Length: 298
Length: 303
Image (cartoon, rainbow over all chains, first blue to last red; front, side, top):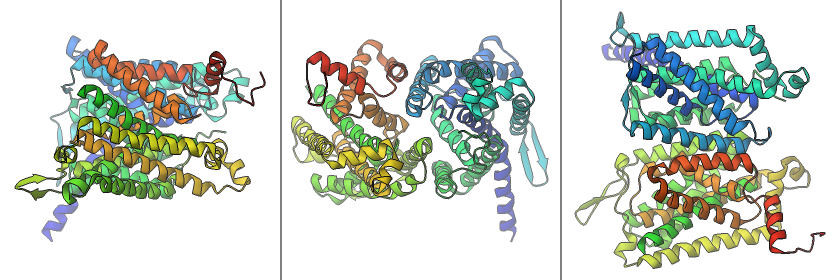
């Protein structure tokens, strides 16, 4: 009986840790879903840009001893710049209904960014500073890592700011208009290209924060993180429903918790297989994801 | 000499990989699952020759069967998702296959030594060609016979109703359905055929490279597989072959000038190519220009 309660505590501890870490997946998922909602296209280079921004933030830390807040800020701005560059090279000039060409181009951008990172860092993983790394709350039998709580709070704040921008500013209004029906938006005088590039930049800010968050939570930054982060970000966006921000948030937290529980039961080697299997389950039974398309496309 | 034979083998295997994606692209299904089928074929064939100690042809046959079977199973849920979601689903499948082989451990003791797939350490000692006295150029010819046969089969099918049906489904499913084509059957058949060809490619790859590592079967390989028919265009099989020659040649030559930076070049090249020619390098426009330049006339050309 003792053992059973011990298991329960361990599993719920895993879930709690996973939920906190899942906020990073939620942000990446929001980024994918924003771009899909706005253009109907998938930006495969998004997670790579997020990690690229995290590297830029790390460079700021290493070179000029920037405080952690500034590191996050540099990451956000760097990824926003990368996001704009990706928009310009992979999405701007390709016809709107040609999804495949943009997809391939963004895959090319993924390779490009990855190679640059590998060469600059010579392929070796780098340690990323973490805030509150030594803080540890104890709640009865549970222990909560301070740095995960910090990461979670940053995620909350970022999402709050994003929602404010989207629903309370003219910029957000333009973004939602273009996402809903870009022809009508154009007739209203909204510049589609400029709005889309802003969408990419906003997604980039989120991505940069998410990249820095992931690196801070894990403690290490390495180019091998790109593909798993891309796959998980896409899975989160799809499970949540492409185009839905609340969906991405909930799916991100869910995937984080789920993944950690699997880690507890099956170990790290099989963990990602189950996350992918989760995606298949959703695709078979609910291809539109949890919340379908909140930002509808015609 | 061996270096060039290796390059020719790689081109052959990648051509098969590209053709398997080509079949699916004809029906409008963008599939990143070819890397997964490739891996399944590779491991199956290797297991057959190494653990069961059967001949190479039965290994290739088994690989084609298993990959085709898995592709058939993948084909049905694939019908439920469209466009980009299919890309995501097939990408997830390839990753799943890779992780499956990452965890696969089946060690057998033969002649005092342990052989077989060893989980994270990969699958080494696939020595069928060496043990049976195959020379390097014999392997190359063997490989390319398969490539030629597959290319011929696909080219032939394009001249018959099969090709027309595939392309009809790719162009407009609703219209194809209205003319009585069973879209489900066509799409699943295309997926299965793609799986068979990719499995074939994998089985040849496993024996040519003698050492399998899960790092080969990643998103990168799946991207290569779909990049070949996209770059080569969908008009005919030779486009894919030329795309393979182009990309592999570029990577090899690029290696000489840029060393490790060749992936950078590859990434930039894809971006440029997609912006200039979003419909593929050998789309109808280019072919028309080429035909005019070479003075080749066809009966249905009005000028």
